[in-house]
Length: 179
Image (cartoon, rainbow, N blue to C red):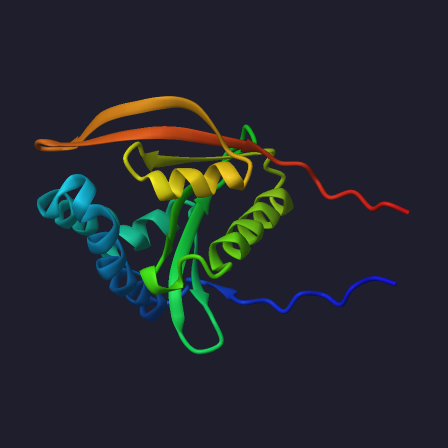
């Protein structure tokens, strides 16, 4: 006898309207300020929010092929994620964020499972992402999800602003039915 299916903690809604794009931008502000200010400082966080997570920037990313999703629990939106497929089967997870009060509750695991299924549905064989080398909690989570550090990346992203990231990868295994 099979156990009953687990009840989903979250749903992931496609970001496909200006209102949902604004909701993502609104969620990004408290998430990024809390998570990244201690690591990269408030000036770089402000720069990155304006350059990467403003409504025009999100709209442009979607127009260029990114899939954005709002993450909702039974009450409200609690985070967002985004990924972009490519022709070689490498899907980039470009955004993977939850409000701090929802960390450690299983939401991130469900978000990752959702992204893995979406990537496989689009015939992608590998997921990859970048994570700041000082973001130890996120690195531990990605390791737990089966990612490994493939290389490091240090790059200027704006006047006086740099990223200092691990590039992490996970090869996807399609689910197999066992008799």
